[in-house]
Image (tube, helix red, strand yellow):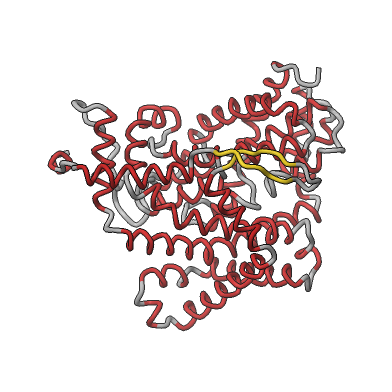
Length: 465
């Protein structure tokens, strides 16, 4: 504390903290209402984040050119990764950024190459049809990867405003007495949750990965935040509830989702595998910012002190811009190819195999015990969401007659969080140290914890009566 006390912030430090941070909050946290034209021509209003609105605007403006740009990125990523990995050129090995971006281990080399091959097959609709079909690779490439390209552009460029100018130091201090005892996490994780809840889970994952790399989260904290607090956005919850035909029950569903989500966030980090992850740091021995709170200073004053100290460390606009561009390059060339590969494979398993039917069979007796109607049809719906969160709603709509059961399926699917077509793939392609089998176990744990709670809430709210 002695060093921190010697720092005396001036007006310049306060402004340097406040202006970029407020702009970052506006882009990533503050919800806005925008008009959207549905397929039938109806104009509706939806809630979103400014950064997500920018991404959707650019998506629409680029049209088909966006898919061409995306396939170019996939091919460039695969080719450059192979060149650097096999030949070790001086221009790459002598530059820390290029070395870290292209000289990756062989799993990621293969993932980028396979992602590029899948992308080529999907873009030109050639080769094995189950790969490029609209319900498999089409979802992974056309719907997901292309949108990730534009969301990564704006999120990557503007993330430094949110994480480099002291906002997380302030929020971390203010929220520390709530987040640490309840969820075993530092206070700054509240920002990740807010960004996911209002905007998009992918933004929460990106924030988590960057905070882990910078030494603000331990390995355990990063995995917990990524798998527990990359909360489903309000917007996507509306999509799920509308798809399953229960838009009139949105408020009830979101209430049940919130109660179940808080319970899962409290329990899951305290049981394996999350409880077994070590509290070690990424390429360093200790936390970048200490969690210790002074006894003789208010939380707000201490938080502002840390925030202004952090803001003073930022060198200038050029360094922020360079960091933003590097963020974008890492996401485009490192994450998008892996997402294409994993999402395509997950959707193929869901659409062309009986794997999820078999895995869902043990849920039938549990559903019968809980009194859920049509348990024989509903069982697989609670595991198929591992491939894609929207699949349970799509498969249930029309197949499940009971409003009660559809309510439970739609709400539980939004509490499961980990689906390989997006969040799971993003986590595995980021530097957050999580393995596939851990994602499977955490997904099942969240399902088993939230299912009885959602069923209980459905009874309490009188759904289907």
